[in-house]
Each structure stands twice: as C-alpha cells, then as structure tokens.
Image (cartoon, rainbow, N blue to C red):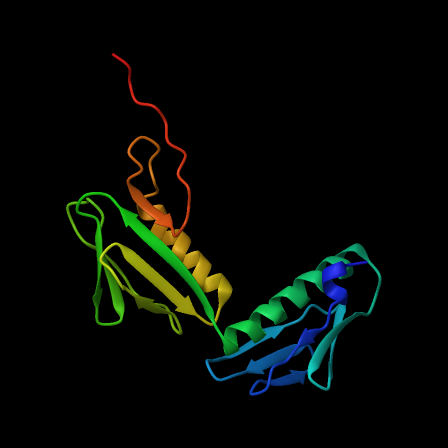
Length: 177
C-alpha cells in the first residue's frame, strides 16, 4: 500500500475543488489548474480534505495512487502559495536583466540569450547575478530552471556557470607544473 497515497490533502480556505468524473479542477487566489486522474484512482472531496481511493488493487493502480496524490497536493500548493526556484550566475561578465516580462542573459557567448516566460510564470532579477523563477506549476518552474542552468552548467575547475541557489559545485584541481 502507498504511504503517500493514504494521506489526505487538506484544502485551505479560499481554494475551491471541482471534481468532474476523473478531472479535478483546483481554483485559488493565484491560478486555476486542472488535471485528469488515472482511471484506477477515485478522488473523494470530504469537507476540507481530498482523499484518494483505489478502485482496483493492481501494481499500476498503486503507482498511480501515490503519483495522483502528489500531483493534486502540488496543484493545491501552487494555486495558494506558488513555487519558486532561484538561480545564481557565477563568472566574470555573467549577468541577467529583464526585457519586459522576458529574461535576457549574458553568459559569455557572443550574443545575449533571451528566454520568454511561459504562461503563468514570472521572472525576477533582484541582483544582476540572481534569477528567481516563480509560478503555480511546480513542473514548469523546475523545468524552466533546469533549461536555463543547461545553457551554461557550472564547470568544475573555476566554478563558473549557472547554478541553483545553494548548490555546491565539486571543484577539481587544475594542471600541475
């Protein structure tokens, strides 16, 4: 049995949950998100809690049970508080700037790299070497942060590149004379 799937999801005040067959729609102060739950799992809305129950006891049903519970919990969290990912730019001349709602990066290439903000996602640049990505969808925010990091991943000799905030880069020793 899934330990994650058993736990109920608390729905905070100000959030409305609508269940239409297998489609669950969560609407909150920040956004509205919907997702279709797998057929093996049934979603029950009781008071201020969402409970997920298995319809059949197969391996796929048990896997979908835990997955569905986690995704629904992330939806509830996303429409209330949202998700945020921070990136740091380390290197001489590496900087970020806002161009309207889009992000413009100088990462040592011969050109600037412009990144368009997907729907619902916002960029913030508190310092030239710091980027904050926030939005209601955890997967979109994380994937966008990973794609930005992939442009110039931190290298092990000097530590230059784009890294997650607080990420430790394992350094290597250079050539010896």
